Length: 450
Image (cartoon, rainbow, N blue to C red; front, top):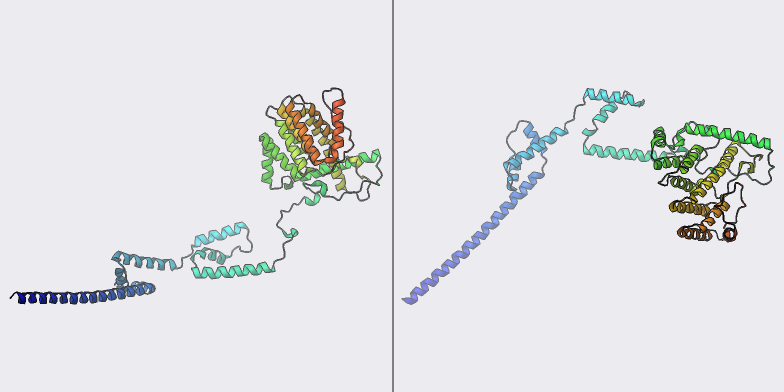
């Protein structure tokens, strides 16, 4: 009995295992079928989404209010709701509304035409089609815009190919009606405008001829300066800039006035003698904040920055006044050079006064200016060297040491001046005590430079 029971139990277990295997196979087969059906629905929904929605819009506009089952089923298969379906349908109808051409407002068209007429475009005045096209530019589609932009760029390239090469005469320069009236053309480098005439081999004029030439040159320069002041070239810009400069010169601070005067001088020194005199007046101004030093610095910066040539200036009487190729422009520039030489001598006298100032800072600045002028330009080098050598005997040791340093820098820049510097130092050591050296009004013999 026990053996039969064991066999029955083993057979029942075997049957149960077979049933479980059969059930698992059927479940797997069902899962595969479900997965296959789901993939088919997803593919169908994606295909329906890629279809144009215009057909659905037209069906809805023609009176078909029933929902598109294909689109709705596709949205539901992707996990969407009915609200998502309505959102897609509303967005498509909005696109149709934007695609409709917008009507041009006749009032706006008239206002635009009137505005174009007020601007003075004679070629396009009264062209209503141009205004309508401008008003409907925003209504063009993307494809139309890209095609038109390509055609416009192509036309521009054709125009560039047939254009003339740009030359200085064809550049868009502001034309000045008074430019042809100048005897001497405005230029920051006035000494390079005219070709220099040879000085040797020309007979010196008589006193009467010299006075008449000086008078003529003075009148020509005054006339040129008045013409220059009445044009926009006095500031290099528009009339508004000229008004701004005049306002700065009348009510600006010291630094603003120095900048304005320097800007005017840099534009054309020949026609801005008054600006140079204004800088000199500011340099002679005495104040506790070193206002005079600022004015002197502005003049020296312009002087060594290209304001004068790399040679000594000449007096008017030393020019070839009776040369056969002499013109009125030569008379003007020679007269200005004579005035500039005398102007620099007055600045030299001002530097001598500053070099003996009670404040050590002012004396140090003046000595630095003298050294810069000696190294950069040959004008009045003998008097400048005497002023610099005199500072070796300054009561303050730091200033005397600085003077020795400046002399060493001068020798490095111009080694051939060694004999001249030794002679000046010997004269300082051997001469009797005095209050200071005064620059001579006579032109000294030029020293040898490298």
